[in-house]
Picture 1: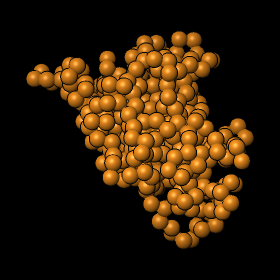
Picture 2 (picture 1 turned 60 degrees about the horizontal axis):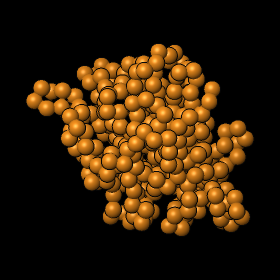
Picture 3 (picture 1 turned 120 degrees about the vertical axis):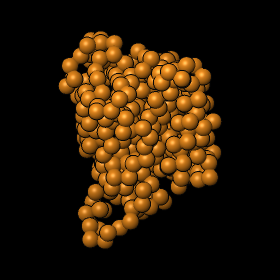
Picture 4 (picture 1 turned 30 degrees about the vertical axis):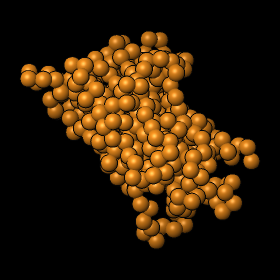
Length: 323
């Protein structure tokens, strides 16, 4: 097994657009030739688009893009820009009178950082498509949907840290499986090999960690309103040949990567959602694709916080290493 770039997966392009001052952005994964796709939504507060059609019992077999956005539900507007971009290029599901691009998406809450009046819109979604590339460079940290991401919000935004966007991709033989993950969780981000908290809710001293799960257990009877300022979003992609039902299973298995790195994951105030795409170039075992997806998600989550930079007063992992 070797590590490669997410954009090394055949049939996949990735583009970002962001407004750093407003601390929001979007990331698009284009699969213009079409990709079999699945999704698994496990958080209790999701904001999603076109997830029902990924149910294997429904008609459409392939999709053409996934967009991940900040801006909470407002950010779903960015998908319209992706629709326009694809329509202009004659890409979509053929309904005889035209071709309808199939664009799935999900949003995270970043309105509490930067300017809440500025959100990803149609123009930003279109720009992300124009920026899409298959180049080996795959930016991480404060880019695209990760621009306004924060983590560790159990004690309020004043104790939170900067999250971001991470990427990881593995190749075994001819099979490639990768993940892009935007980490904006309520909980702490953990290095699974050691159990060390990398980023999360800070203690009063601003240098050590309060331990989100410990805080929650101590306050279990308070029925505290943690508010929906969270959600970790991901896209898993592979060059394997799989159908919709199988890609729904891969999306499910990929969530293991969140369970290994975020504590707690899948809470009622997180909208944790993972999409899975298959471009159909290589025959492969579904179990292997699923376990690689979980590993890729795991490492992408860790990279998201390690590559993030401080923004609008929210310190990052890098800052703690300098103290």
